[in-house]
Length: 121
Image (cartoon, rainbow, N blue to C red; front, side):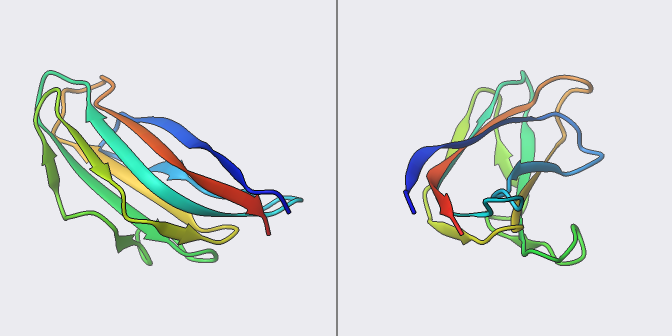
């Protein structure tokens, strides 16, 4: 089974009303597992944004079984960025969710890049 070092996901979080999926390894054949090596978050709005990032294990639901993986209500000033370079192992079906709030309505508040290593399960 080959390892694939790559950008796992490019996402923009735009709505405080719902969590956005940042990354989830594939569950269809061939199922995937992953090690997230880094997550980068950039506030691209003109206002401060509050960020919350969660891990939800396979077979569980958000927000019931969500586990916070960055500091609660992480504040990013306009134009600021945050990098989480703690490794996170994900099995097939595990999900990383993100929620951005306090930004201007209907704009792209937060650019997110998730990078790491994937392989077939």
